[in-house]
Image (cartoon, rainbow, N blue to C red):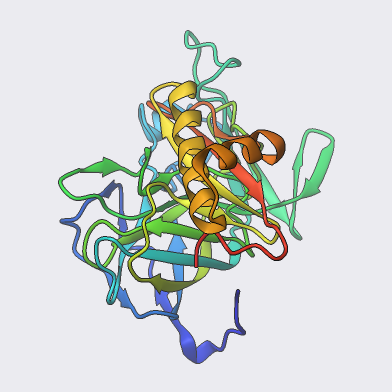
Length: 305
């Protein structure tokens, strides 16, 4: 799925090209052709405004994090009705990050939002007397939608702030193209994050994302799909958990039926026998996001590509 990388192949996408809205009207900051490797330099979700624990988060950031993301990248040849693949080749992170209790069951809204600045040393993070290896992932991966302005804090049919902890090195994210060039945006790296991000943040951190972009022509895809070594996952969202889960299951059922030559009913039977349901972001306003998965099967066609 991924090839060797040479320095001559890489285009660096500077972090000063940051935006906080997915829009077809955003001017492309860079172009890439099918198969090209690009490095996205990204800022943490607080736009580097959190510098000390001596001041409150509200004093340093305001009411809402900016969630700046880098882009957009115009993928040459991508047209509505196509799909782009984003191969995550590498993720590197800075030497410290921020974690906060921003929402969810542990937040007391009558009090100031608690947070910590945590160091990252030798690929490990420490909280209290517990230390573990970082597992960097990408929160925002998205394309633009026609006629819509969507903040990078949000998830939607084109991806956006999916906050899926499996969008890590080695994964591929398949995204629908709805506008010419796709207008790919990436950012919101977390050095460590639990499923559901139940407090509202992971370890929010600056970093670099090295990706390869590939183009698949004329393929129907209604929601982003994450491909791992062993499985496929539809990433979906909705106003309620039920809405999000239903959307993911409907798309996964359609993809399985199409790839395997099965009826929709048989695909539904298969999913109840072998499907996965996992939380991406259970604390996101206004949408909850989930991933609905199925294992790869030897001898069966790929769901995409």
